Length: 161
Image (tube, rainbow, N blue to C red):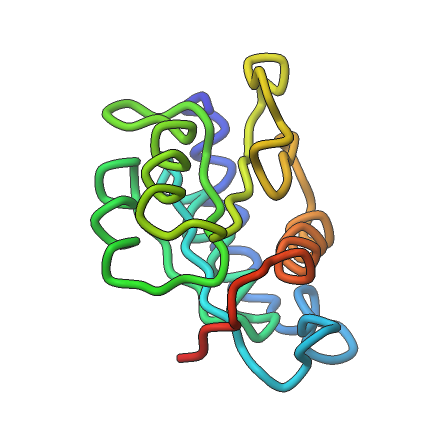
């Protein structure tokens, strides 16, 4: 993500904060279809703080328990405080890439779904290893649907707050 993209994410976060919840959840809270009454824990890892906070805000407004971590190393540290129902990770991060983070997660907690967010889908050699690969830029419904689908396919018990 370029600096301009990061600035745009910050502006969007501020604007969405002003307009929420009408924009984020116009009718009712988006909850997973398989477990509508149970909020799930979602960890978002991105090296752009604005993007991580924006995704966490959208998911929280939709009824998920979402937390943001900035960068791979911080994401790994926060993951270990889990358990987490789903992890969303940027692909390209310094220190610990999304792929490296996903491999650690698989060793530590097999079956935890990892959703990769990337602007470079061609860099991912085996997308089948992940619950989903979201192409940046993506919208609110893309994010919510990716999390919902990952939870529906997950073999892990749903973790609550």
